[in-house]
Picture 1 (cartoon, rainbow, N blue to C red):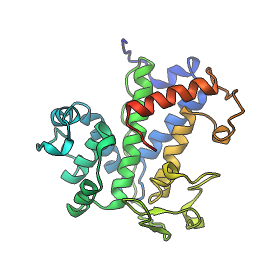
Picture 2: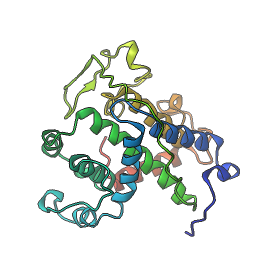
Picture 3: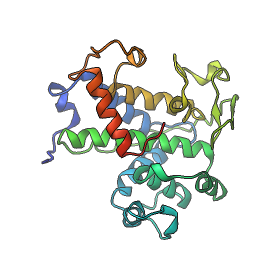
Length: 249
């Protein structure tokens, strides 16, 4: 598909305003000071997410029987630490084959767990938005300028290791300062980023705009989801994409 230089905003006539607005909020969130990273650091993670798609060692590892059987240096922008570069690249290019041992190795190399979770959120959001622009045949949205300010460094008091590789907030352990980290549901996919509540909230604000309204997720009798396709069609597409991405949740 031929890409054009048309900005995302120009797609309003071709798609829902809800999508364009969700992308705008997401980019603003990424450019702002976060919980554990400054706006500059978060934009660097976004840039590295795009850089990872051209990384030679990532391409070789993705096609190898095991990604851990190959050693080598990532092609990278030079803005992040070695551990964070590895985290971003593997999350962006081969997320279905991560391991607890690999993750704990990153921590031993100095990557903080909160920085890892916040980075994972940014990788997910940039991957989502860039996939959208690709399918619409337009260039990816240019990275915004980072906003000044310091990270909040807020760590949820209820976060702890449960049956996960990393600390999360179990349902019932959230406190008001965490914000609306959970709605009506608190399944594993909702808990995954809960160590950084602001990241979890931002990711789902973007993803729900691409999927279906949250209140309809468990209403299986409702086929009218205010989309151009029906609920069964949406679920077939979602299931196929999940299989191709080795998404096991």
